[in-house]
Amino acid sequence: FIVNAMPRAGIRSAVSDHVSIRYNTCTDNGKWGIFTGFAEHCIIEHNSCSGSIDEHGIYFSNSADDPIIRYNECFDNNANGIHMNGDESEGGDGTISDAQVYGNVVHGNGVAGGSGINCDGVVNSAIYNNLLYANHASGISLYQIDGGAPSTGNKVYNNTIINASDARWCVNITDDCTGNQVVNNILINQHPFRGSIVVAENALAGFISDYNL
Image 1 (tube, rainbow, N blue to C red):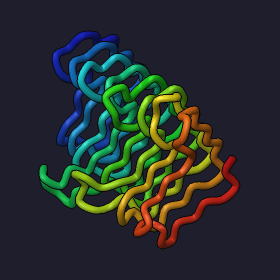
Image 2: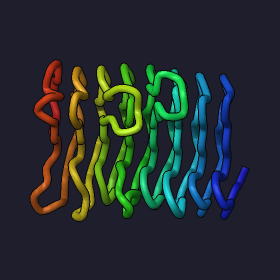
Image 3: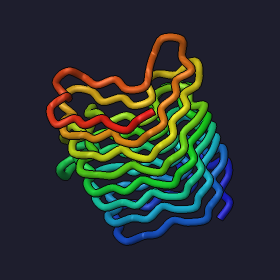
């Protein structure tokens, strides 16, 4: 489908399982290009999500596990390109586990803040082979604000992240997000003083960083 200028989501799937959302173009929608809530084992692939006025290109929310988000292009959205949020206040355990996020091209997002790929309460997941460039906030973030637990045990590898000159850090790991791995990535930050990786002191337990440029 081509879905343009809807007041909220271009495409929404909620309280669902094993739904595939593929080969859609969602442009200039009010909140999100594609939005899911409690959507277990969802596949979101080969979509173009751009120009979301308030928030994100793709927003995978609530306590749903095992999503596959791959081969999408998310660009020029006001906040995040791809946002995953366990959102404990909505019920469930507040975490998203076993996510696979790969092969996406994410650029020009984040004028209002956020990340190219944003992970709140995401655990034991893999984020790999993504290209992020010219985003204006963070590149990939692992954290806990609304999620039911810190983002722990994740593998971030084989990504290329080139941040804009007004951006934050390429990889951002905040308080208590332990056991994460950042391996074999290309991380370039055009900001005058921010760098490639920032890790909170209490997130260093089990942290592995190797073979990054």
